Image (cartoon, rainbow, N blue to C red; front, side, top):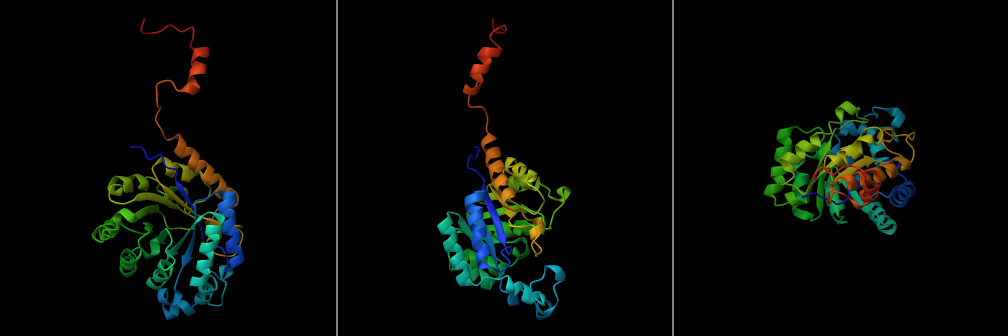
Length: 295
């Protein structure tokens, strides 16, 4: 049976708000009203839980992109607290777009679960954090979306089996993903969508595609291959300071991506009858003098 539902487009704001709530609000409004995306996604980290003391106090590896004297200070500058996320969620409701967040650790998972969004994302970097996955399975009833970047096939199987054992596999959406910023076309490996569908489509809720490439040509192909969710990083200005902006789409890009992905999905059908209504006029005009083969 063909799934006729339009793909869900996720505009990942991530940390592209530069630590500024007003920029975040503008991005939510733009994603909803101009781009026509379905979902915006932020990120939540407890940096002292994620980083060792040495990592926290070390200089940013790329000082040009840093918002602080150390990597820890940089990450804290970009971090929104729980009450700020609550406000982001309210703005999403106001502008008519779904709020979601990637959680990077158990502390962040607990905080975002308290907001009870429709979906929570587990990024590729954290998909083997069993304690976090267990907390989400046991304490959150919404959809759990999880990317498979930087993940080998045995780890993929272990993750899906874990959700099956928890009875939560039908709330799990898994994403084909290559972790890189940006990813060259030859490393996108779109046929991983086909592999994941063949192996897991009947075991999980849905298959998605999370892209970190340039342009929007690939995303429509992902829809044609069966991806039900398309996730792309979103920024207001690709020249802004920060590591993700260069691999992000600006508003015009996200708007066109939404248009194209939805158009491709509409086109993924069989003919409902031999001669469609739109063809009848042309057939009567252009084939009227041809001999019928059955006479």
